[in-house]
Image (tube, rainbow, N blue to C red; front, side, top):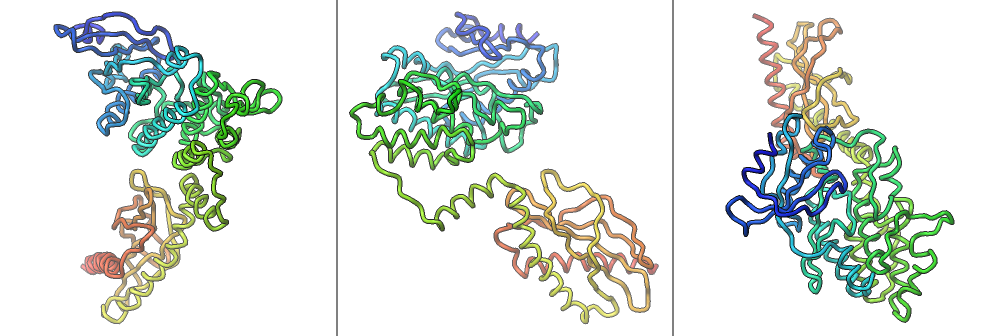
Length: 452
């Protein structure tokens, strides 16, 4: 059993936490080396398939983030690659981070922190979370107990417990079931606690950071964004910033920051980590945020909308494919008189259900198929074309060669990649001509075979 395996390598010193969340943590040291300590994590219910998957995700994300110097514990030992073997007990051993969790630190300092120290801590957390998001990992469970203060004076914080983390690059299979909600004692965000909400949105992590800022200032967990009187956390009795920060000229700017950052509707909150960091810097100085012109706002919001709305991205790509299609037609026109006795023509749009390359999405635009025949013959050989997308890259796809006999077609089964190109910068005429030359040459060979 896995327990025997980790026990052969690690010796228990004492229990750190038990039955919290999905797992328990134990302080251990390496067998024969008492100075090499770590934190052993075991699942509360090792038979739970979802919990086993989550632990495997946690190990992957801890390892990849720590290698990129993101402030998370280093992964020392684990066996989570065996998550799909129910008979094997899973475990993780992580680096031991010395210090106090933020909730204990705040409690030991009178129940709340000064505005300047709160700014410093949240600013450092924003830097760490920016790096995490840049690595395409969402934490999804930011709260005081999951932040270890390694050095209070330097606001040195390490982010703990990636048990609910999610990798947006898709290297991991999803384990959040449809309709499942994610609970966080810091705050219940609408998108995380409603069955139809998106629990893979980086704006949720950003909102949790704003809630953490509120906690640092007040020592109070917001728990929910709106109370029974539809008040935000900083609008409730005893927690208005004019009282919490009495005499501090920056209170109004902090209040405005919370107005935006704690909005119930996710679209009304800070949309990017950079936007939150900018507002924190202004609030620290007590400076009014600069009002943006309509053009500046459109550019900023447009970028955010495109990032979140894949359908809009594909639609905009499709508009560029119209130009792409026209350029193919123009080049085919130059070949018509150069390939005697072959005849190169464009056909009407044609498509069948085919498997796309892994991770590719169909752009809503078919390209006119290319056909080749020989003068005096009715049979044609043709290639169907389309364009798909993966991220901001497009790919020209071709079908298998098919016959066109008296208007009937033999459908193809798969799409095959011709070449990828940047959707923001159309391929050069030279690149496109080379692609089409190769396709036409292939069709000419097929036509020649059909004569034998």
